[in-house]
Length: 392
Length: 98
Image (spheres, rainbow over the protein chains, first blue to last red):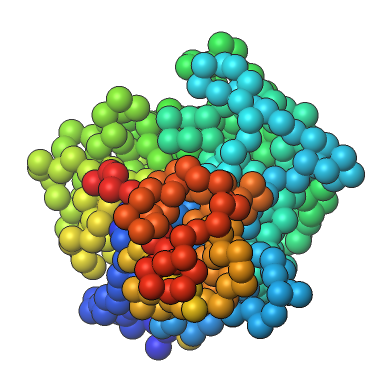
């Protein structure tokens, strides 16, 4: 029988939740890296025991962690003792430096700050790690201030894919309220050269050549909080999801509005339909039913908690527009938690398991496509991210 | 032997106790100590000072013989008590936040 391993990043450490395929009984391990913010943990599809984690702190900066045994033990890639001075500074673990070289960096010195004035790019943290679909030692990192980095040596050294910031619109990007973060990276299983990313608050972008050339893909997004609601960039995309069995069909939770694209992001159309509010952060797609989509409506951008004090996941089985509230097993009164953009995930079992974590430290699981829910654990620190691995 | 005291989270990151001991050639300065520390424990690179500029991270402090050396030149020779190992070079996490 298959097993599942749920990787939970929280404000004060990482936790690993494991269960058999029934997904009824759980073991919780952690906190790993207690006291540190674990923005994201994700396992390699090519080697499920290889897990990458982004460990960060306002005091000590960014640390990357790697496990080769499914999260039992961890190491800083490239962080082993160096025997002699000749190898000092090589490798350079945890080093994220923007590429400003004339050859590849197309020197980028500023973006727009909150006040609309030019502001230098400053690395703050890694929001999202995305392991390669095929190479365990290759992993991508989405960072704040927004850029994408790649490591091909298991996380020991990182190099910016500078074509993203350098493609032309970078100097006009502005941060969202949470910072100017690159929070979503989606790799195309049908085309290794195609990658989608999303940035708050610049929008969605795509490369078709492995990361050399990038362009905005925001046609159809309408955002009334920017001077030109239909601008090429400037949209606060909160998250994008794609069923890997159907590359190019994308679902987006924007600051306001839920949207879909059927042409790899070339064009988007709103599918908010009958949602009680279309503000939110998390969105995901059922593994087995690619037209089944999940969102967690949040009251508003001023009130970052669930709508009407009820913890409700909304599901559309028709690819959007018609949504039903999923409430069985979820609190339906006095609930005022948030569900962040990377805090929802689906497993690859049938029926599909759906998981999400809250700002109140609950991690919920549904093992029946969302029909019913139960809390795996109630009292973790604020959940920043949830990923799940389905294991043989 | 130079003694370096690390804050809780960096001890855990480097998998060491409250103090580490390092060989540092004279003249013993903050820069020389941190270079030796980062060479011995590469996972600490970037956690105490910036990878590129080598500036101290703003929420960390350096205490030396009951004095705050955070704003001293990194190339200023440290007191004999540090160089001899009688007193530790202390890396302190600022008390801030919640």
